[in-house]
Amino acid sequence: MKNKIALKELSDKELQERLEAEKIQIVKMKINHAVSPLENPNILRTSRRNIARMNTEIRQRQLNSENVKKETNSNLQ
View 1: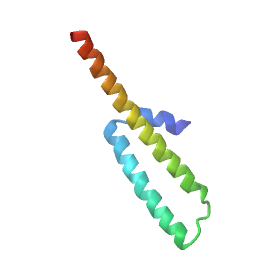
View 2 (view 1 turned 90 degrees about the vertical axis):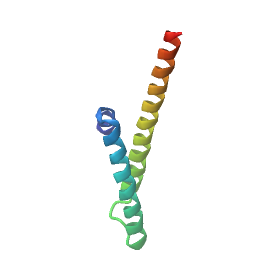
View 3 (view 1 turned 30 degrees about the vertical axis):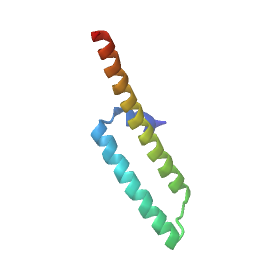
């Protein structure tokens, strides 16, 4: 739950950077897991879910900005 709150506080650029870093990290972990098993394979699941949370936050921000644009356009008319 702490992670979810922290994502809302990040700027768009920081969120994108974290998303890219997390994607790179999960690819490396998958390769390492294929070669030799990870001590805790649940880390892969946690990482996937963090990526999904970040994508969700990015999409929510996009939708909010689109709604604001629509509202300002309708108010101008």
